[in-house]
Each structure stands twice: as C-alpha cells, then as structure tokens.
Amino acid sequence: MSNQVILFDTTLRDGEQALSASLTVKEKLQIAQALERLGVDVMEVGFPISSPGDFESVQTIARHIKNSRVCALSRALKADIDAAGEALRVADQFRIHTFISTSDIHVQSKLRKDFDSVVEMSVAAVKHARGYTDDVEFSCEDAGRTPIDNLCRMVEAVIKAGARTVNIPDTVGYTVPSEFGGIIQTLFERVPNIHEAVISVHCHDDLGMSVANSIAAVQAGARQIECTINGIGERAGNCSLEEVAMIMKTRGELLGVHTNINHQEIYRTSQLVRNLCNMPVQPNKAIVGANAFSHSSGIHQDGVLKNKNTYEIITPESIGLPKNQLNLTSRSGRHVIKHRMAEMGYTEQDYDLDTLYNSFLALADRKGQVFDYDLEALVFFSQIHEEPEQYKLKYLSVQSGSNVMSTASVRMEVGGDVVNEAAVGNGPVDSVYQCINRVTGYDIRIDKYELQSKGEGKDALGQVDIVAEYKGRKFHGMGLATDIVESSAQALIHVINCIYRAEQVAEKKEEIQKKIRMETV
Image 1 (spheres, rainbow, N blue to C red):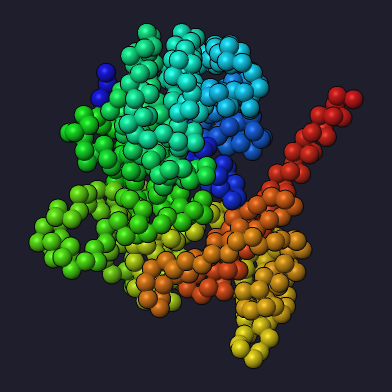
Image 2: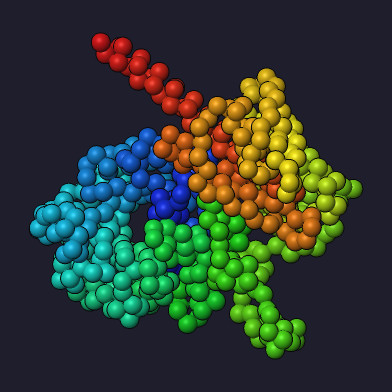
C-alpha cells in the first residue's frame, strides 16, 4: 500500500456552496491557482450541471490548472456526467466524481427507491463516466450511516464497473473515530477487489470530529482525504486541509504516511480563502488562527524563550507565516517591495509591481510605516479590481456629529462621465451609501456589514466586507483604507461593479439566445 495520502481539495465545490454570496469566475480561478501552488493532488472545482456560471468556472479553471488534477461533481445521472465531461475536456488531466446516497434514510426518504435500483444506477453512472476518462471517483453519500453489508456490496460493484477511487463520506459528521476507522477496516477485509481502487474519505464536522475521523481512516488504510481550506463547507464545515496536512507532517513517523503539500503555502492560501470567501477564521483555529502561535501564560512564555519546542510543536515559518523584518516607508524603492514579496512566497506573476508600488506609496504617505500584512492586503485588494470598472470613486466628503445630521457628497466616474451627488443619512456610512445609490440607480439591500482591522494601532487599515442583495442574488464586496467611511464606500462600489458585470453577461447571453431562436425560426 502506498505511503502517500492524496489530498483532494473541495474548497471550490463543497466549501463554496456554503457561502453567503457566490464567488466570481475570476475569484474561483485565484483560489484554484493558490491550491495548485499549495500542491493539492486533486481539486474539485464545481458542479457543472447546477448552472451556466458553474459550468463556465469549471471550464476556466480546467483550462488554466496544469499541476493538479481538476475534478467536477455529478449526480449518478447521465446529464450531470455529460456536463462534467464537457466542462473538463479542456484540462490536461481531470477526474469525474459521481455520487448517490446509500444509507437507508436517504435511499427511502430522499431517493424513494430500493437499494438494488441504487446499485444499478451507480454502476451505470460509473460506466458512462468512464467514456470521458479513466479517472472516475464514486461516492457513497451518507456512508457513515449505511448498513455495512450494503456498503460492501456497493463498493465492490462500482470498482468492478471501473471506479478508480471510491469515497466513503461521513456526510453528516455522525461517526466517532473508532467507528469510522472500523468501517474502512471492514471494507478492506470484506470487499474482494478493494485493492483495485483508492479508498477516500470525506468527513464533515457536525460533532467536531472530521479531522480525527479522517486520520483514523488513514490508519485503517484510506489513502485519500477530501478536505477544504479553513474547514469551510456545509453546516459546521468539512475536514480542514491545513490540519490534516500538518498532522501528517508532524506525526509522519507515527502514521507512516506523507503528502505532496507545500506546507509553506498554507498560511497564504488560508488568508486568500478567508478574504475572497468572506469567511473569518476564529482566532483559536488550529494551524492558521491568529492565536495559533501566541503565548499568554508567563510559564509558557518563559519556556518558549528558552526553547521554542517546549510549547510549539510546529513553527510559524513551517506554514509560511510572514514575519516583519524590513521597515517599509515612502522612501523604499520598488526593489525592496519586490524582495519583501518574494520573502513572503509571492512570485512576480502573482501581482503587478507598478500597481502594488503605487498603492504602497499612497498608503505609506498616510500611515508612515508599512508592514507585511499591509502589502498582502494591497495585493489582494488590487487583484479584485483588475477588471475594468464602470463605477469609480473619485472623491467623498462627510459631515457628521452627535447633534448634526450626517451629510455626504461624492464624485464618481461612471463609464468615463463624472457625476456628483449629495445625500443625508443615518450616520456617515449610510449617507455615503445613499449618495452612491442615487448615482447608480441600483436598489440594493445590505444584508451584512463587517469591519475588521488589518494591522495594529491608530494607522491600521480598515477592511469592510459587505454582502448585498440585488434582484434575489447576493454579491460580496470588499473595501480597504485607513478611513473606514472610505473603505465602506469602496466595498459598496465593488458590489455595484459586480452587479454591472453580471448584468452585462446576462444581456450578452440573452442576445445569443435571441439570435439562436431567430435562426431556428
């Protein structure tokens, strides 16, 4: 049996479907490229049959990713499999992942079928998927609650049909480690052709045991773990990639296994997913939480000063956690910025140096010294605004106080024209938002407003994340500035530009469909 554990990342499928607002194709591609740098073996990037947008994002990612295997999900239905196959055709190497429920409660209540019919559907789905690729994965949804006889029968049948990976999910996070490990062990003992496939696991965290269950499965013989960055996903989330990766690195001698993960990319990938997905990481989160390498107890501090290994079993550097070493000010040149970005693990292809440097100078003039976390924030912020913008903020002014009605005025560029507007509101942010809404004419409802401090002290950057609803669809916007009113305005304008682009895409699709209808007539 191989000592390598394949890491199958499903951040862009299971993780993304749990977000309050969908990611754009460009944002998904950014995450996919980060996962490629991280060294994931397989990345599941979407469910193509679910929508034209998901099909497009899967196809775009499949076209760009070269060093990881790209995978798409499908139900055990011919149309689903065809959509996945068509979306993935452009990839150098790809996998189709098809699934069906196998537990009694799912088979009877959800599928309303008998188990024999489910087995027949599964075999047919695997054989159809093999028409597109030899790399077919099959999942027994809710395997953790499936009668073991049925599970053994299904695993044997799909392997015989051509599945080269068989996934055993604890879909609702129900099992405990000894129980889940026992399921995997039983499969190895009772399924005669099990060595013709890689056994995979996909554990959810409803009872907080997804990582423990995944490691127990590896100890029982599983050689693929399905996981997500920061553990994001349905309900309480999925098995956390960074946790299982560092467990197998730190306790590799005990477990006797290893992964292909580039561990020094963990922190950067975690931060990217956190920002793009608008999913904060709790401070006490293992590996990537803000307090993961903090020591408050005097006894702990004394021990770490004498020998870090007394209370740190992994180092911050091992996951690529950046350290501030250089004083970056408005007098710093481009070469210093480039050098610092390289030390943090960024390549020249990850950012535009001229854009970053101009943003750096503007920030340095305002706050004096710039730190690593500032540079990373500027890179991220510039990336989300790389596409041409219909709406741009040129100027804003706000008057507000305890005995004064808040008033705001803005100047915006709209498609090359300059528009001025003024409004009153319930506080400075609301008054600015009233101005922007008057300029754009969009009827937007703010569902969520979140302010975070990026850095420390009076010169910290304020990052504003909002989730807004427009015509039943949710959009995420982010703004970054030393002034929170300005960052709030930038966040709303980010949303408005996303809405504008979505409308342009919808109009283009309607034109194409209209042309097709006309040609048909």
